[in-house]
Length: 124
Image (cartoon, rainbow, N blue to C red):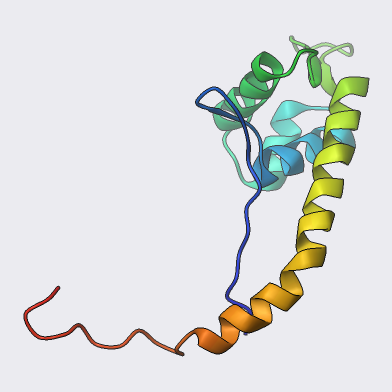
């Protein structure tokens, strides 16, 4: 059983500019052409997805997602060229890091107990 979970996050000030959830959202927007459809696909509220897009767009020099609000035929969203580049670079970084992990994971895995030991008396 694998127990090591790495989560790469790129910060801009105090905001998470890119992380696994935002990368997944970019992929979903690219696939659906809509923030709301992407949110539904991922099990997120529209508001949560919109806030994630807003953070990405404010943190990167160029918008990662272009959107046209409304309800007509021209409404929707697309991942910009900058968004595609950011997504490819983020996924490449994930792959590079995970390529190094197996050796370290084996060492750490061998050091871990199957379950935590009970607390020592007098300590909690």
